[in-house]
Length: 152
Image 1 (cartoon, rainbow, N blue to C red):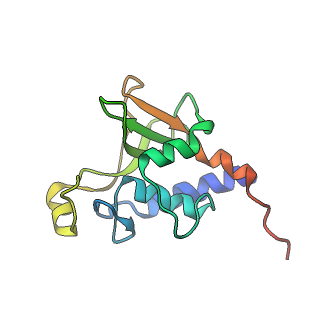
Image 2 (spheres, one colour):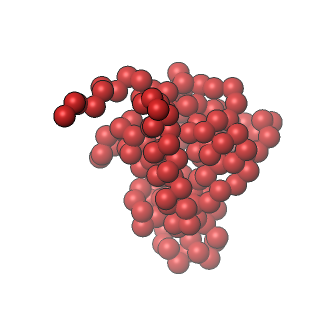
């Protein structure tokens, strides 16, 4: 197994470990994530973001735009655009057919109680048809630039 495949596996493993956790607007820890908070936490696992770093959906799009891909694959990010062409949601591809993301809430989803009432949590859903407006990037490919682990 090479570094990219190992990073891809840990990236997805981390995302799946949070399945069922509540969606909390602005959340960036296991007590509740918003969509970008979940992705940032998973990127930290594989060394693509620093421990105290944060990013919005737009910042993730900008950061990884040079790793654009044409079809959804394991570990890719789907960065959704609204009618005004602004990024508003991000999900992680589990495979070419399914995605995981923190969703179902909005700016009013600020407590666990509200999240459960709104049915807002980290969940798996089908990837929508390509007609939906999104950018696909593969941030895991950028692990090529990370230093090799020190030898013991």
